[in-house]
Amino acid sequence: MAVVINMPRLSDTMEEGTVAKWLKNVGDKIEEGDILAEIETDKATMEFESFNEGTLLHIGIAEGDGAPVDTLLAIIGDEGEDISGLLNGSGVSAEEPAVVEEAIEEVVSTTAFVEIPEGVVIINMPRLSDTMEEGTVAAWLKNVGDKVEEGDILAEIETDKATMEFESFNEGTLLHIGIAEGEGAPVDTLLAIIGPAGTNVDGLLNGVPVAAPKEATVAVEKTAETKVVPANEATSVPDGQRVFASPLAKKIAKDKGVNLRDIKGSGDHGRIVKKDVEGYTPSQSASLEPVVATTAIASAAPLILPVGEESSEEVKNSSMRKTIAKVLVNSKTTAPHFYLTIEVDMDNAKASRAQINGLPDTKVSFNDLVVKACAMALQKHPQVNTSWNGDTTRYNKHISVGVAVAVDEGLVVPVLKFTDQMSLSQIGASVKELAGKARNKKLTPAEMEGSTFTVSNLGMFGITEFTSIINQPNSAILSVGAIVQKPVVKNGEIVVGNTMKVTLACDHRTVDGAVGAQFLMTLRSFLENPVTMLA
Image (cartoon, rainbow, N blue to C red):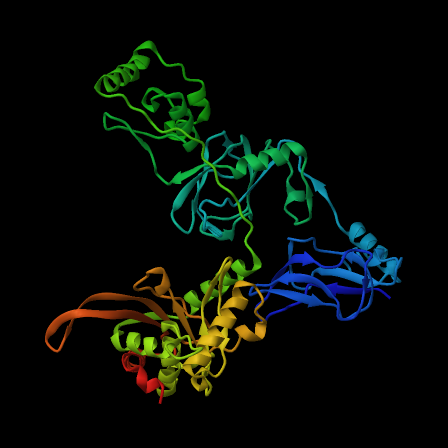
């Protein structure tokens, strides 16, 4: 019997996976333990193994495509087996097609479809800013039954950034208002309906699916492109008067080189709308003024403006990038961050590292010294080695430091388990191995879980100081800058010294300012006296 295989959850935070590569094709024989595909999660690209044997009968997600966890990935069964019952999205086995057909017939028979009457336009709550998710109707400037002309302002809508005028690109009668004054609703919620006077729109208001004719679809798309300006915006003219015009009218006037002051508006309160500009014929006297101005400018100096074509490219976000974005936004918006910066004298650290690396088969980086110092400082300041759990705070008895590693598609954080028990050489070897796995997308979920503290180092890029977003559920993350040479005062004399700035980002729910400061003082003590980390 055929077995349905869904997109697996390959990490604790995975919500979507992308098929990086199929290693089997439809019709291939599958043995238990065979690798079916390589799946890109939010953390790494992982091999997905089959726990079933048979023939690969169907591939549900093509190479390069992504899909949420539990989406149909593949079907394995007997060669030639009928799987049509499994491909209808119901998850019903092939032996039960009648159940599926009955369900479909029931849905069709109980669902009413209505057509949008001719000339009727459905207007939804527009997205008036790039971050807008909900709008509030501050004021309606038209009432049900009012005539609406193209360019008339229907309402003032309050977005997340400003109160904006919402202009109609359609003409007719306002048949229905879907959102009352003072009320808010998500983008794309029914805002209004415009159409011929007397049209019955009750069928559009009962929540059933609507089959829109082509004309109505075009009208809705046109409405979605409505131009908006801040409420009460007007065009200033040289003589100090103010001319009120719709945004579309302003654009057309600008494109045609027409002065709005010369146009008489036919809209509400003399407001200039689209048809006023399009129907305007400039007089000879009016057309001479801009010519004179242009001549004057040309005689002063030639004006050569750059020309070109605006272009952009939409690149599909990977599963890893989308998850990183979600996790970081959640951390920044839920954890009250504060930052503490301290400067460390790295003269002794440089000398000690040179001596250590002089030993056979030993290679230690400055980052390894920082990781070791953090682990030892966490032993002395357990309040920093915690996690906020709402009603409780978890004090981690173990110390496992995560080390942020940059990869092509974002950032991953492999974890050094029980870091405080590791020597400097063990830390160095482990970081090198895990970083290599990260860049090759071979890290396992287990190698990225369980951190109690995180270190992020941008010193190798010449960054001297920066702040990081906490890697939850950690309570803190250390940002490490570059070692720089500069004049310093030692024993009352100015000498050349090597210093490094580190910044601790703390979750104020678990780590107070004094606690964070004491941690940094201990950390500095270890880094400035590396011999204390070797004892």
